[in-house]
Structures are given as C-alpha cells and as structure tokens.
Image 1 (cartoon, one colour):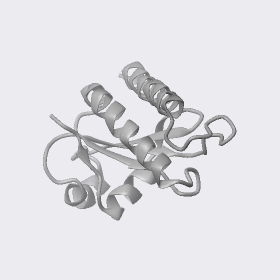
Image 2 (image 1 turned 120 degrees about the vertical axis):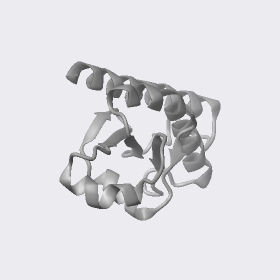
Image 3 (image 1 turned 180 degrees about the vertical axis):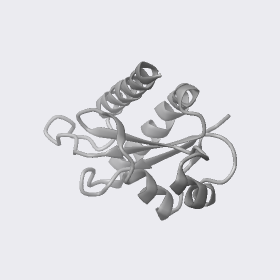
Image 4 (image 1 turned 90 degrees about the vertical axis):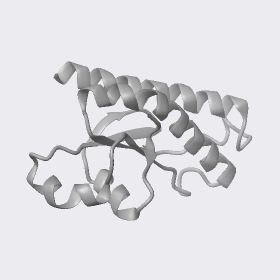
Length: 142
C-alpha cells in the first residue's frame, strides 16, 4: 500500500508538535500514533487523517534549501526512502503518521550544484539512517 501524503496545514502542525522519533545531522522524523485510547486523538485526529494506510509528509523550508530545485530533490528523496521504510515503522506503530523535516542546510561549499548526484546520494544515505534509527528505537521499546 502506498503511503498517503500530508496536504493540509493542520496535519503538519499536529505532527510538528509531536515528539521526534529520530534525528540526524540534517533531518528530524516526527511520528504520531493514532490510537483510539488517547483522549485528544478521539476528538481531533480521525478528522485530520481519514481512511486507512500510512501517512507521510515532508517539510523542506526555504530557510534551509534556498533553491526550489534543491527543495524538490530533497522532497522526492524523502518520499522515495519513506515509502520503503514507513511500512516497517507501522509494524510497531499501527495507524501512524510520519513527518520528515529538514532542520539544517546542506553546505553550499560542499554541494555547489542545486541538484547534483552527490547531493542526491548524500540526502538518500542520511534518510536511510534516519528511518533505520527510528525503526531501531521502535523495536527497542516494544
């Protein structure tokens, strides 16, 4: 099943206020379990995240990636890597929603081109580490 993408601002706000599951140098992964037992979830969350399936969102602010080409490259990598890993995370957190947020810029001196292969590989490797850390944390807690 393909992960559904977050679209509405209230969805992003709900996840940004949730605790982070994992961090790397440039990214933060937020997760929110939609369990009917939680009191605030019963009222608000079903309306924000209707239907079945995993949810995944990406935030790439202009502050940290000035060029649209770079933001789009990072966003595509987030959704590509996230699609492969979100199902593994859902095994330990059923009915969950995830948000990957870019928290610092990639160095312009290291990555001169806005959409280079080197940048693409660096982003992908770091996202793999981010999702692996989150999966390791969730398995360790169970």
